Image (cartoon, rainbow, N blue to C red; front, side):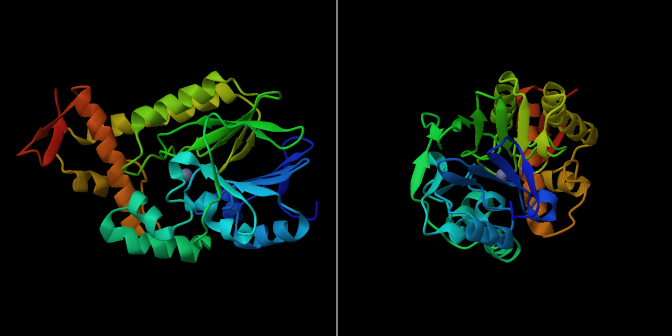
Length: 298
Ligand SMILES: [Zn+2]
């Protein structure tokens, strides 16, 4: 294996380490060397992708979802088939269409620049779509797509059932579960985590944390609990009434906005609003002052 920064998952499945240790705005990719050579996700960094392209005759590319930290480098393989989730097919590889999905109209331009400049994103249309009915067979390896919305509406995990290997992508078992788009959903995110945990995988391969082999049940429970902790944090901030903007200033989720403040603040606001919606449904928070502020309901 000439490529540096590769870890072995099985004798023919490899984790290709992403730039910046696979942290956003990059992610780890998966390389499968079977009868067909397949690359899953292209957010590991353009240089690494070009190196992979030189070393391997990649048959096709698959994206777990349309986020650019997983798809920015599809263009490096634009002469090969590119398979993306059915739910993301229309917008995949199109920076303008994606910006409309992922941020507000005012932030669209900033988001587009960020994707191009920091992730190397270039427009590249997909050729094929998949959904939960698809089974990917590469030779001796077969992967089942598992539909896991909540993070985005087009997020899939892949399960290699024979050996119990789950490719969990952005259900990444870090301390930062993420559901910051209009299309994201906390109830769906929770369901997706439960669905993955119920598989009781032997190994989890996470896009931003790499290979996890121990305490997987506990890891999923911890990941899930962070959502509850955020809810409690937001509730405690509402002892005194606050607007969403004031809550964003307290930053109960990100904690700080170290780069492209405007985007991070927008996503913080989106996540806070989703928690407020849940807290209101549970009768724990109510709107006050002509529905501009929120306050604890007890
Ligand atoms: Zn993502």
